[in-house]
Length: 281
Ligand code: UTP
View: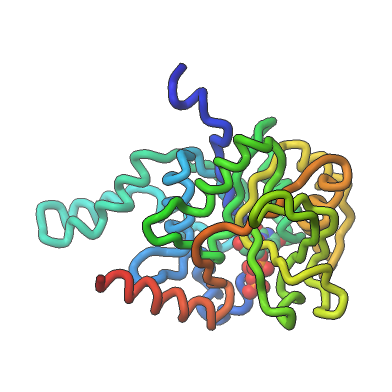
């Protein structure tokens, strides 16, 4: 059997249609996912994490004003020509390798109706198979260990159900995340029984927050279609996952590694300092 047919998760979805209002005015003409930490845009880190996990099929949900994303994962002939055989050529080595190894497919979310809706928009790109989701503004790193997606795919191979990456947060921050509760069935692994989108600290079922890494089984599309708008009048993936958890099984996984919330200015600066220090060592 070829390596390709053995893979359980072949596609990674990157919802990248949001407005990125917390980064205005920077995100007026540049997609948030294209903001660089050092010299690489956030989305490129996400694509590299997916590739490390064995996924080479990238599905990206974009929106108006996001064409820079497609141009980034394409060849720029003029630039290639200008720097060919010069000392600067090596700057393009990493992105060239990614373009060679991966295929990229795109769809547009016409109206920004929330993360759940963005995922539903990608149904035709994904089809009837389990898939990974990466929110590129959550930048993850696990030094020399396996990346977060790789850890999650190993877990998926054992449990064959949707899995969300979770992290313990300060109680006062629960209103920024989807928050889960459940029974710990293994160290750091929870069988989820409740999930609430952005609860106030006093209403939160725990301080275990969902971060931007998911493995989803394809029945999530039908569930999303039937999920009414929730918090912020948006179609929430958290609400759809709760339905899935009630019908069957959804796991929460406390991953190994660091996560930076690059959708916020503080997290972005923290990530920049962390990766800069790493680049010096
Ligand atoms: P966020 O809420 O963090 O992104 O959504 P945002 O809306 O772009 O940022 P702010 O709050 O205005 O600063 C999480 C992820 O879901 C995507 C975003 O692009 C981001 O990757 N998303 C969100 C969509 O693709 N479509 C949507 O309708 C909403």
